[in-house]
Length: 205
Length: 167
Image (cartoon, rainbow over all chains, first blue to last red; front, side, top):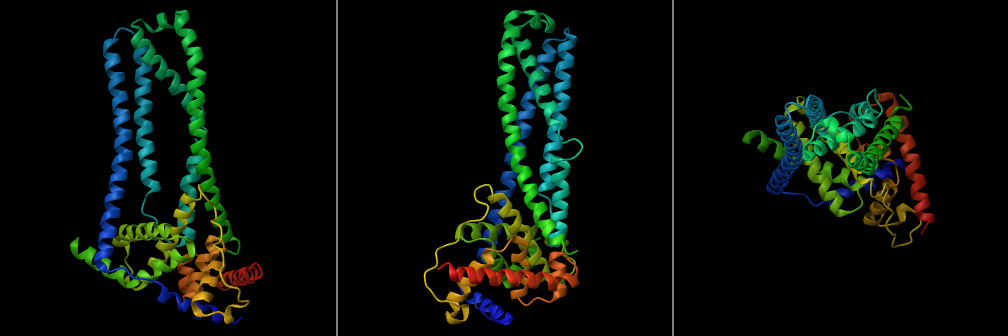
């Protein structure tokens, strides 16, 4: 088959395409912009709302336990980690949704791969292995100690509390790690897909 | 803002054929094509203020359309990495023997079997873009464009053959 035969056949594609009017395109764009803004507001709004609710609880609990220094340190640590995580999470999401589509394919892939690699395989990529149990334990302690109405150390000395912690911790950690690992695996698959494409484009360069 | 949007919509209206063609080679069903079309228009609108070189509007639209489509394939790949080929209806043996619509369908099916990067290179070749434009859109050197095209064409012909044999 002649090479330009393919191009001749391809020219026929124009007759198969139904074009949109300017007004239809306008409606399409407006609804997409609205959808995207709503999605952003929902995701960032939900994250901010959950984190704010949690911070309010930490502050109220701390105000009610001003004499319990360990409890105050526990809640302060949790509050700091929550605020930092919220900021990093929203920033990363914003970067990923960022405006990089108007670059050549290879540069776009490069930027995307670097961003995802930094997050998934970079220096701090395994931090979640320590942060999840640490955060989980501090949160459980904060809630449990607050509702027990006792001092931090007193609660830790009761058999019931220790038993409750011993049972709830592995279950909670299993659920938390299961979710985190699933999300991570999906993102790693995406990263591999982009790396494969990039490698195929680079193998002649 | 209104003037900018008006100008943008006029450009998209004039160049929308590119969006439809990119959609055709990357997605094999109408709902995906419609979703992707909308996503491309949105991404074009987002990057429109940064479009300084008004002469290369076509290249800009190709780049955004290809990048957006690949990004979408990545997202939908959770469900199916490569959708299965639709059944072929007729039994002609070579592309030249078929009528134009049939041969176009066959060509699309063969393109659909290429990987994502070869799809974009083949599309630009079929659209008769110059090596310089292809290099600009894909981001590879001009000297490698020819090699890429030949490789993609060889794969495409192989796909066409196996589609014919498989019927």
